[in-house]
Structure formats: structure tokens, C-alpha cells
Length: 438
Image (cartoon, rainbow, N blue to C red; front, side, top):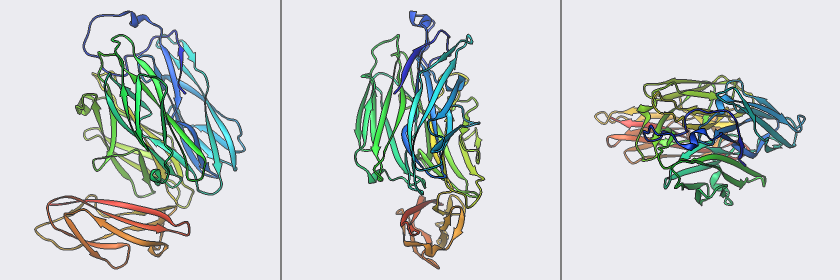
């Protein structure tokens, strides 16, 4: 749950950009209050594996003050699960499963205000169940902190991700969504929901949490929270959206030697693309020491790479992206749950995007490679190979089940997807390869 605590210190600008005004209000001198929440309130990790969790803090104006907050993390049972703060991502910590059992992870946040006063917030806790082997499940939430305006409807999605980074949301059906305040109304269908903000005040923001929970296929509960601010009527709000190939994402799978690229854009509450207005230095906070991010400010494209040692167990962590502007006070955030080196994965090492010439419709071979903890594995270890494609290309068989030959039919973007079932665990895995016909 989110807890609000009054603080004596002043704060920065609001979490959204207010309409231009030179008038001051009584609210300007009201002591700030702070809300803190954990994105994970119950989750799982396998023995010998690691996951990350993060805490977020906003003030009563909706300003995200996580960067000026210190966090103290503890585990109730270090023999079951340890917790270590992430050096490069303030507010994040890495939890490692040590032995089968349950541990309570606690975080205490202390906010340092502009006048150097410090406010300690009540402890937040998460229950972590350590599972045997590799079977574990957690929620991936794309936006740990959200801002809405009166009447705004914001779609959100939660993904249930297993320990190998696979989206298994469709395998469970008891999804539950709840809002802690009446200013945020939730309309949900399974793992998707619409949040509608309501705030008739032109002087006061409303801050609360939206909780999502579900029972994983192994019978254990998992849950997470988002901090939501409904701004006063004079405000715009901004959301940060991360995507691959134009499709919004909240998860990413990365192997050593196979980096992943994603894009980002900022959308205003009236649906205007405001990315160009966020001309400041964006931050990419990574909780895993084996991850790195290289971003291109001109395009807002980022490349995520891993130097995890091939053959070591899978690691799941969070990558938090924060947009910044020289003219707008809002700092919208979005996060990715990153799975490094899943036990089984398909990779593609050809050109991306794959380019085909319509004027020279020669069949081009496309191959998927099977990987086991980051090392190449024979394609025979994956059964039931299946390939699908979009309408403007056709394909035929290649030299084996892991290869096809693709022929262009019409101009435009396309994709081909390979699917198979890996190992004795019968783990379904897939890869989608983007391309374009020119």
C-alpha cells in the first residue's frame, strides 16, 4: 500500500506540467506529503537465481522524488533470500534465492527535501517465495509511477513472466485489480485495465495506488503496485512508452552477444507526441551489474547488452527509463523487466531489419538458433518447429526445421515468427524477426 507522510521540506515542481500561470495559491505553502510503494508486493525467485524489485516515492504534488530518497533494504531470512541495493539504480535492489522458503523483504525510505530536512517513511514489505529449480513467476508493470488528469483514461497492462522471461499471462485467469482512492477508477479485463482519473479540484492533487494480483500456475500469489497521481485541473500529464517495432513492451530478453534495441516516446494526456519537448538528459537505471545501455538521444533508441557469463543461471532485473526536459517539469518513467540468459531461447543473428528487394524476388534464407543458458544447442533439442509470416511475404522450407527461405510479395514491413518446444521441460519459446520489402 502507499503511505502518505507529511514532510517539512519543500519540493520541486509538480509531476506534470501545469498550464502557464503566475498566480500563487495557498497550496504552494502547504507542507509536502510523500507516498512510497513497492512495485512488487509478492513474488517468486528460484534457488540460485536473482530478481530485482524497486521502490518509488512521489510527493503530494505528484513529483517523483525517488532520486533524492535513500533506501534501506533488509531481509527477514538471509538464509532463504538475500537483498542487496542496486548500485546503479536508486530505489532498486537485487533479491537472490538461497534456499526454498519464504522471506519478507523490507525497505525504509528517507526523503531529503530541498531545505535538507529528512522525512523517514513507514516501511514497505514484499513477500518473496523461493522456489526449487527454475520455476518462478513475477509481474512486469510498465509504469511504476503514473500521472492522470480529470477525465483521462489510461490503458495499462500487467504481464505474468516466468523465470525464463516468457509471458504466461494467458495461462491464468484470476486477475484482480484495485484502486486505493476513488479518484482512480479501474475497469479491468484479465491482465489489461483502463485507469480513469477524476479530480475536480484546481488546487489539490490526489495520490493513491493501483494494485494488481494473480495466482501463478504453481499456486503462489504474485502482486504489484503502481503509484498514481491525479493532477489538479490546470495540468497536463505525460506518459513514457517503450516499444519494439512500434509495439509497446514491458519485458525484454537479452543474451550475451545478442543485444536488444527498443525505442521510447513521451505522450501527453491529450494524446500529443511530446517526445521532442523532452530534450534533457534521459536516464537509464539498470539494476543488474551485467547489463549495459547505450542510448541515442536524437532518435530515443537504446541498445541493451549483457556480458553475463555464458552458462550461468538466468537473472531477471529491472531497467528504469526516465525522460527529462529543459522546459517541462514532468519526469515520466517506464520500466522493463529484463531477463538475461534464459535457460532456453531462440536468437537470430542476421541483419535487422531483414531487407528484401521486390524487384529481385530471390528467396532469402532465415534461420533461428537455439540457445541453452547462452550457449548454442542443436535445433533437434527443440521440437514442433512452426513458422508464420505476415501477408506480404511467402516462405518455404530451408535446410532444417530451424530455417526457412523467404520471398517478397509486396512492398512494406513484414515479420516472420519461429516457434518450438524446448528441452525435457517442453518449454514453448519463440522469436519474431522484423523485415521490410523495398
